[in-house]
Image 1 (cartoon, helix red, strand yellow):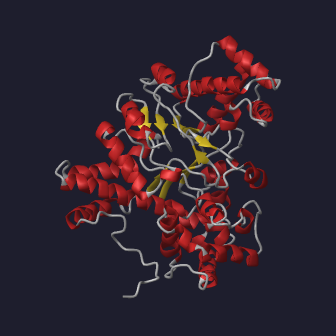
Image 2 (cartoon, rainbow, N blue to C red; image 1 turned 180 degrees about the horizontal axis):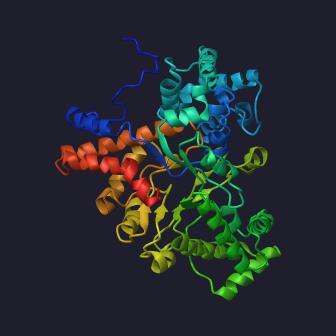
Image 3 (cartoon, rainbow, N blue to C red; image 1 turned 135 degrees about the vertical axis):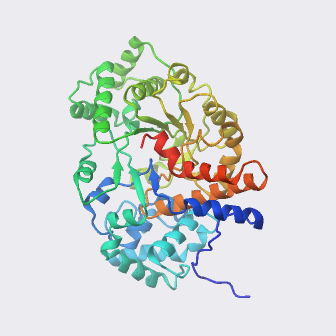
Length: 472
């Protein structure tokens, strides 16, 4: 029997295989398939939509900016430079060579969510019907390039086609947010693109670039950051600026989620030591943990939902970091502890009516042991969806199985795509809808949930939870 080499997408993909359960899952999925996309956390640049310029070429859209794609190819022996990483716009022939390398190594993505997303993008966005190979690489490149030349494939056209209601970006505290302001003032653009406050590098006082960063922060905030008190005030000023530009959240990613407080005098001492380059690594970590506690206090004041994405060793391969910069595929997860680390924060603010704290992890061992019990008690705590390495079918189902019995569904925050590749946004959200449909269908089939309740839960997971948790 011959095996099809096409990209025809099976209508029941990712749904349970048992016929009776699959029938329920089909009905559930059909109820949310066409609901709008609410994306409260991602890494698409707002300038993409503000400028609305055509995407330059298939490789620049689907390969080079997406570390999910490039890291596996790098592991298979392809240098990142040969995939266009860190090189800026490529001439057409070089872009074609990048695409050929991807297609010739299509097999390395077998069984991965990257394969699922790429196939969905090619088939559903660009109507590609054949599985990529070395032989058809140029034909597929031409087909995608032809689409990208059309006005309907510009960023705003795809934004509307994808059904995106809200898209949050990730932004530096010193960013002037001009692209967001342009979009908000443009009557031709009816979507919502919101900034999110990401202050990581300003909190790590022993980083080589920290001193220059806080000096710049003081300039932008028009606040003297020569003291600890001024540093805090500058952060408050910039958060207020983000709120005025529509922000509803902050995002924090450090090695851990420690929130132990420092006495005011000790915080000032360590801060001044950092300004002179004399703070130790231990002191820098203590200052950052104290400042993370301060960020929670600020969220109680200004209402910004606080996301914690901890425990990733950034830039694990220093030679690659030096050559190509950050976010190029070599960030590796590490273990993390939440229960004791967050206790100082939660004792102070865990029952505050204005705090919303969304916890993410790449350490699955914490789901049922720590995260679900925390979210099952503290009204401020919500569980973020599986992200990054866990944004995969089986991992998503493991998450639901691990936390639902303790927290139910209302203590979760909805799906977070965390996307850098623009065209991956709709396929990632569709994947989550299918997987949640299957999980809920099993509960219905086992008579643990009525189908009308499952329909309510699913709609809430798709749009209700993210709108409520992120104040959208």
